[in-house]
Length: 319
Image (cartoon, rainbow, N blue to C red; front, side):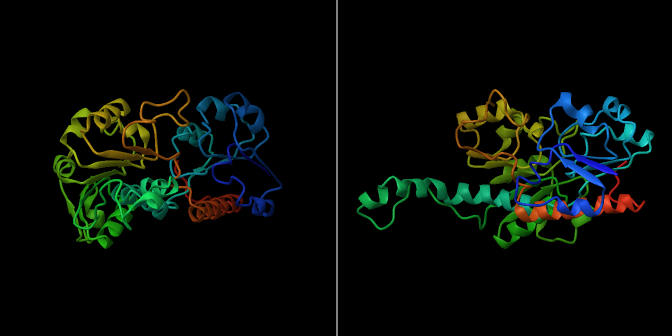
């Protein structure tokens, strides 16, 4: 049985090992990345095909007669035409709930940077400002407490809940919007409310909702005008949830105080993006999920998925 990984670099840039696969399959091949024109040629002999972001369309699946199983190296599986796979009797599995704490941590990384301005003051010291100062302490920008501030969480699944738990430890007030409020009703430190109330009262708004027809470009000029001018937007969900041009204008005009983004509408942003270089906008390259611990957990679940398929009992099947 042959296994082919089409785009393994993001999961394993070199600090993990695929060696355990040799105990599960006869042969495996790992590509860091696969161009669209190479998908078929690289997949033709595969019994098991592994993808993270490389799309597997109906046309592609129909051109792979040996294919028996598709493993997705992520929670989201929209890169695979699951219906086409199901019609062929090909199970598709994903990796659920591996990066919850990792994503929640980056949310607070953004929040603490906006509150404490660590990078700004560190750069100031490197530039010699402290050495030249007459005072033992100086401020390049105001520093503020998270304690007592209001955090609005849009989407209250596993990650939203983890963010709320951390916010509770910081003594923040937490508002949340979710279609599934019953799931975490036992967590009394959260007030579920309307989106309008959350947006207007929050000092930080953090997005943890999927990209759907109803959430596409949900954060637009109208949304942003309802936020406090002192508030910050954080997005670690999907870039398409935000109308990027509207956000860039809101940042430039001071409609909101800043934004912390780990996702953009097109990744990587070939040809640039209107938010790169925008005023008070921090952007990281989709790294919220990618802590070593989260990627190790992902790898272990992936190996379990492959092992279970080989044993005839596929796990985490999404189709």
